[in-house]
Image: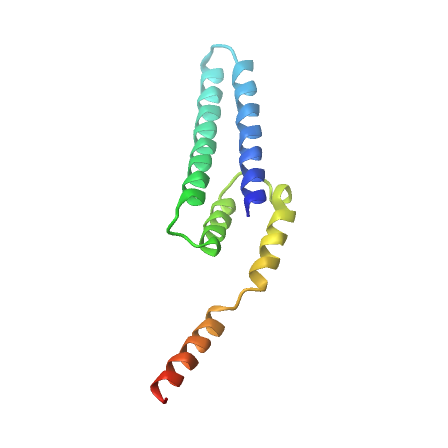
Length: 119
């Protein structure tokens, strides 16, 4: 998952830098001010995404699986094209595929409890 986070942050930084360059291209004027405001809003949104990614990855109360789910949810609303992090998502999918499902874990727990009850 670390590779995915690095890739996301890298793409966000790249997009922020591109917005800054576009912002500098516009001079004064009504239309230019409108466009600059839109670019500034987009930049703030990208910074908020970086902050949210940091918050998720640094949250010690979340399991790795929960962090992955939160990051994927965040990506669903991002402005980063999915092709940019497709390989990293495949890796996470492969790792999660090998984990027992909630049903499997629940069944295992139930069997353990039943064996204790009927000893």
